[in-house]
Amino acid sequence: MDEVKKIVGDIKRGNIAPIYLLTGEEPYYIDKISEFIEKNVLTEEERGFNQVVLYGREVSVEDIVGNAKRYPMMAERQVVVVKEAQHLSRTIENLTSYAANPQPSTVLVLCYKYNKLDKRKKLYKAIKKSGVVLESKKLYENQVADWIKNVLKSRGYDITFKASNLLVEFLGTDLGKIDKELEKLCLVVPKGSQITPEAIEVNIGISKDYNNFELKRAIGEGDVVKATRIINYFGQNPKDNPFVLTITLLYSFFNQLLTYHGLNDQSPKNVSKALGIRPYFVEEIQIAARNFPMRRVSGIISELRELDLKGKGVGASISQQDLLKELLVKIFR
Image (cartoon, rainbow, N blue to C red; front, side, top):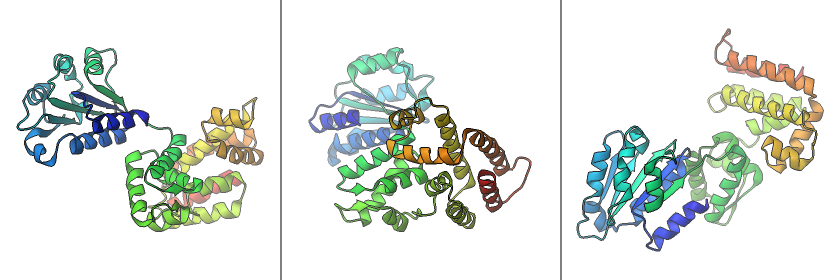
């Protein structure tokens, strides 16, 4: 993320703003920038008297302003970090007068997670003028694999395409959670190496052969034997392979197939754009479309909805193993 690199680079060069508003739906970058400021703006000796961490649940705007207006002790600056600032949403506009004329010797960091300040409000405009604003946007699922590759590249590693998608399929789009798993991998895999599905299976515990990614592919290819093996594995390991994740992924997959069947332009480029998938997956969709015509796809989507309700205990009490078997019967009948 270029904005993050710029903020870090400016701080390293000593170009430090008096206010940082870190806001948005993706908490990963908010935490990273906040941690970087906490560790790098002051020396270890200066932090004892000149660095304070406040929490939005526990303080008022007046408390924040009071801390921010203090003068540093035996240091050029002080740092005031406000975590969970989103809990001050009803009163945070009262910070406007301070933001318009911030204390030059204070670095005020506002961590406003899972939401964002209204850009039309005076506070946002004041911070934008006197400080730095980072809007941390949530990545789409089809962007996360590239993010993983870039993070590992910056740490001196490479990763196979299948391995990165295996992580996304298992961990979702939570960048913080993914980063923790990447850190584990970097501890055990020699620097300069390529991370493979085998390395993920051994060190993280995600099966390279028995996962939702491979199940989706087997179903799309009409491979009943392989799909059955995976389903049986899921049934034997329900905690690691919750039914809700499987049904959600397959529901999304068949909705993509339905969209594909409705496209007038089925060229790879247009399919990738229309379905929001990487070009690599277009062939997988094309193969599945040959095995599942539009009318059949519509029926499967309807049946998946019913299974989803059963999985939530609506109108039936069925074990996960039986639900999975029923799922395959409905798809391949």
